[in-house]
Amino acid sequence: MAKPGPAVQPIELDCADEVLALEMTRWLAHLRSERRLSPKTLEAYARDVRQCLGFLCEHWGRRVTLSGFAALEASDVRACMALRRACDIGGRSLMRALAGLRSFGRFLEREGRGKVGALSAIRAPKVGKSLPKPVPVAAAKRLADADERAGETRDPWIWARDAAVMGLLYGSGLRISEALGLRRRDVPLPGAGDVLVVTGKGDKTRMVPVLQNVLALIEDYVAICPHPLPASASRGCGRSRAARCRRRSPKAPGNPHGTPR
View 1: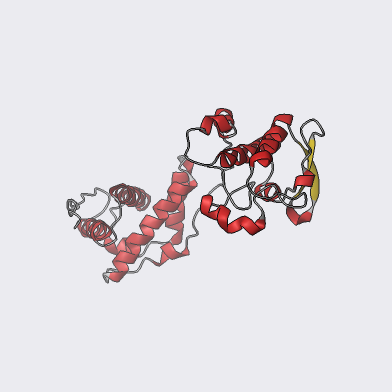
View 2 (view 1 turned 90 degrees about the vertical axis):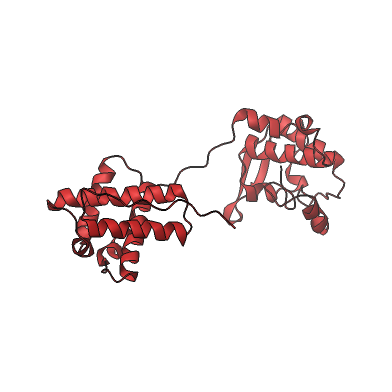
């Protein structure tokens, strides 16, 4: 049985009256004991609500009361969020702050202490999408070098496959679906060509350059792969061997039945 954590200490707020401070203390205790939120999340929620109450106190020119918080308007919340945005607070932090305020509002409503309807009228802030981070060059080289993985307790053909897959994805910039769709006849032998014809989105084909050392990695894999690889099939394991390959390793890019690990 898990050892109960320390009780939430009563909160003292210069920006709010004792009744609202007590309700905030009870809310945090509820989150800790019944919702099992982590101490870090509790700390963040408490900080966000405290900052909002501090803004409202200054915005209204008086301490925030329970009835005043229940009568909160959407414009008040937007003004608070706008101020924090102006202080270079990121979208994810603003989303967490709004989530904390909504949680506090729901708690007050469940306890019969008023309904803060304005919080449900506020849209969550937009969060910018970050671009995928590329694998560092040194790490990609290690992944593509079968000799680096010689100590692993796996069949050598799997090391060679993983090296070929990483070489294709990293060296030629293929999408996963394009790598999965490669057939033996699409890939030239080392010294016999320097481009690949791949099928991408919408079944559209395109030509991409391929390095000779990547072609060599592919041929090394084909030479020792224990499964038949006819010219019309992909360079992964034959589809009739799918179950066997899935038992060996999980699905992954560049190989319909196995993943570089």
